[in-house]
Image 1 (cartoon, rainbow, N blue to C red):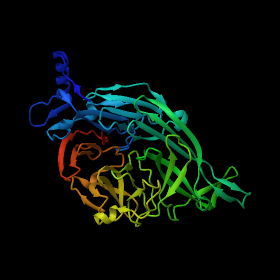
Image 2 (cartoon, rainbow, N blue to C red; image 1 turned 180 degrees about the horizontal axis):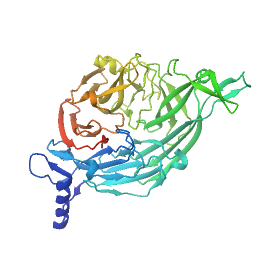
Image 3 (cartoon, rainbow, N blue to C red; image 1 turned 90 degrees about the vertical axis):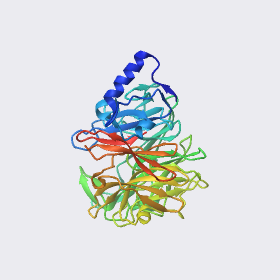
Image 4 (cartoon, one colour; image 1 turned 45 degrees about the vertical axis):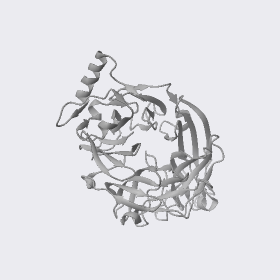
Length: 455
C-alpha cells in the first residue's frame, strides 16, 4: 500500500502536529511522518489491570514507517498516543503480510468474540474496514485464533467435558475425558465466516484410559498444499484412581506426577474442517499450543516447523519439531533442541518467527528448579544445521516475554519489541540473512504496562 499522507496544506499541518506529539527525535529535530510509506510497522502494548504485567487492561497500537522503526532517535509512546483496540482484555492481534491491515477478535466481555478489521494509515489512524463478525456463537467469547494463511483466519475452542465413568462409590471406574471442540474459518479480505465445525476430541484408547485429555488448542496454520490445517494442543492428565466426591459425583484429581503426554497436534482437512485426527511426536513431551503467539510456520521447504513449550524441568527444554509436507504427520526423525543448540538447560520458547531458508528468531526464557520462567532472551536459529546464536540485549534478567504476540518481518528485517514491564525499551532489528542486530526506535513505557508485539 502506498499511503500519501500529505495531500493538502491542511492535512500536512495536521500530520506534522500529530507527529510532533507522538513520534519525535530525542536529540535532534522533530520527525514528521514521511509523505510516502511503503510499509507500516505497527507496535502494540498491553495495559495492566490489577497487577503489573497482567496485560488485562486492554491493548494500544501505533504505527510508524519502517525507517522510523529502525531509527533509535525516534520515540514511540503507544500508551499515550496510540489507538485503543476494541477488547476488554488483551486483544489477539494479527496483521496482513504487507502491514496494511490489522485483524482482531475481541477477548471476553460483552463484545468477546467480535472480529474487527482495521486498515493502517500511520500514527493512531486505524480505520474499520468491512463489517464486524460475531464468532462467539461458534467459538465462545474467548476464542484462540490466528491468521492461518494470508487472507484466512482460523478460530478454535476446546473445552474439556466432565469425565465419563462407570460404577458407583467407592467402585467408580474411570473411562475417559474428552473435549468439546469447535473451529471456524474466516475470510479476512471480505470479513465473514466461511466454515464451521464441532466435534468431540479424544485421544487413543490407552491414553484416555490413563487419564490424558486435550485441554486447550491454538495456533492453527494451513499447510503449503492448502488441504490441511494443523492446530497445536495442550494435553493434561487426571489420575483415574484418585477422586473427590462433589454432590455424589466423582471429580478425578489432576495428575502432575506422571510423565506428560508426547507432543500432539490436531489435524483437520481444509477447507472442509472435516476428518479430525491427532498426530503424535515421539521427540518431546511438551505442548504445541503456545500462548497468544504463533508457534508454527510453513517452511521454505514446505514442511511445518512447530515450537513446543512446557516440557518438565530436566527433560531437555523446548524443541522445534517438523511436520512433513509429504505425509502431513510428524517427521519423528527430526528435532531441533534449543537446549542443545545453545548449551543451556530448561529453555522455554515464548514465541518465535520463521524467516525463510531454515532461519528463525526465537524469544525464550529459562525455567528454574522451582518451575518458574525467568529472564528474556533472543537467539537466531538455523534449523538446517541445528545451531543457534544468542544475542546480548540489555536487562535480560528483568525481561518477561510471556505476553508477546508477534515478531514482524519486512524483507530481510526482523522486528522485536524489547522492554521490561513498566520500563522503556527499544525495537530491535535483525537482519535475517547476516544475523546483524541493530537498535531501533525507543519504546516509551508506563508503570505496569508492556510492549507485546510488532506487526
